[in-house]
Structures are given as structure tokens and as C-alpha cells.
Image 1 (cartoon, rainbow, N blue to C red):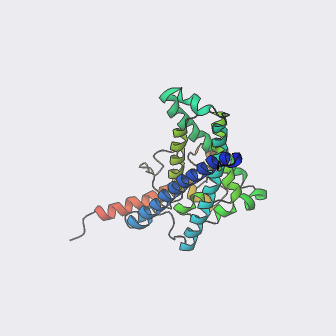
Image 2 (image 1 turned 45 degrees about the vertical axis):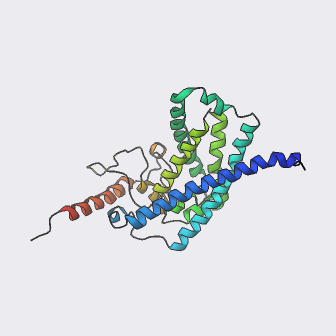
Image 3 (image 1 turned 60 degrees about the vertical axis):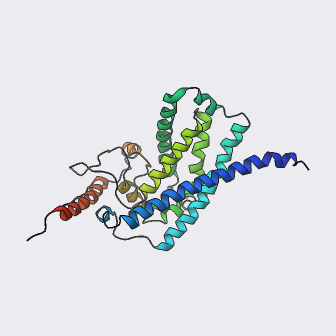
Length: 274
């Protein structure tokens, strides 16, 4: 018997949701577990000097963060149906338009998407820190006072929806190819898991300042989890500097963490006394 017309329309959406869910879960699991295993297990001793805090979160926190993050991925996949539905209905011509604009626009749109997402994240993140919204939208994430790589997607449902909304809005407003969205999501999860890793991974200059001062370091976001009224940016420090929300001790804390690593390296490389 032929499938009912309604079911015939629903099957592609269900299939797309499952595929998106599988991709997003795999991407989150690979990078969260990978960053945790490399930094917290394999390189724990060599990287001890770059550990930002002396303590580690309990195993129960890690398991809870992982479970909540999978829930957030389900929200992301559900919002992904918005763009799929619009594209399938012929109401989202952006990907086809962008394909005709060539490789220069391909890479330009990726850079612009990352910059726009940082602005979206800064202002929505700062908004949900309002005391009237915090408990409903952002409290779950800040239960991870001492973050881990698994904290990356540990969101309340409202915050997950706010974060998921960016991609459909961007795709509606800016012609962008689908592979660009894939690269954007890859960049986003890499920066997110590293930013919550608890180890300062960014290089410092000789004076102790970040080598690339306009990128948010791990210390930058770790300070936000320690003292929530500062450092709202995700990828870049621009908005925090412009709006006066960068932690006043950020550079000092970064210099202190990177100096510990330098001292550890000096100690291991210096010859032992006779």
C-alpha cells in the first residue's frame, strides 16, 4: 500500500533530524571526550603547569554535563529542521546563490559567520545573565563553576534554543553554502571544548600577555565561570573590551598561568646538580 501523503512528507524531515542529530552528537562526543582524554589523561603531567585551577570537577559533574549536552544537541537538530524545511520548500535560495559566487565568497562567508556568531553570543549571553532571565535560561551552564570539556553544550533548554537560532537566522539573511555551515560548526565545537578545558592552551608573549590578544583564551572564559559578571565573549575579546566587561585581572591571571608552565619547562630542562 502507498504511504499516506502526510507520512510521505514527514519521513524526509524525520530522516534529516536523525542524520543531523547523529552528526551533532558525534561531533560533540569526539571533541569533548577527545579534549578530556588528551589533556586530562594523556598529557596531565606535562600540562600540569598550564592547569588553571588546582582542583578538578567530580565525575558526577562530567556525566551530568555530557547528558545535558546531548539534550542540547537534540534542540540544535530540531532547529536545523527550520533551514531544511525552508530549503526543501524553495524558500531558502541562499545556498544556491552562494554557490554561484565562487570560492572567495565561500571563505569570506565563513569568516563573517564566525564574527557574527561571536556578536550574537556576546549579546544574548549578556542578556540571559540578567537576574530576571538567569535562573530559566543560564543557571544550568553556571552550575559548572569549575568547567570541563563536557561543559560545552551543558545548557538549559532556553539557552540551547537561543544558541540554535543563530544558524537559521544567518542562513535566511546571508547566502551561505551548506559546507560553510559544517566548517562553522566544526570551528564552534573546537573553540567551545578547548575554552572549557581547564588548561591554558594559548601562547604568551615574553611580557606574559596573550600572543594573539583579540582571541579569547581558556583563562578568559574560565574567569567567566568563576566570576559570572565578566568575559561574555566566545571567540574574540572585542566586545568585552569595547563594553568594559573584560575581567580587570584577566591579563594578570593569564600571565600567571603561562609563567607556571615556563618555570616547569625550565626546571625539567636545567641540568641536575652534581
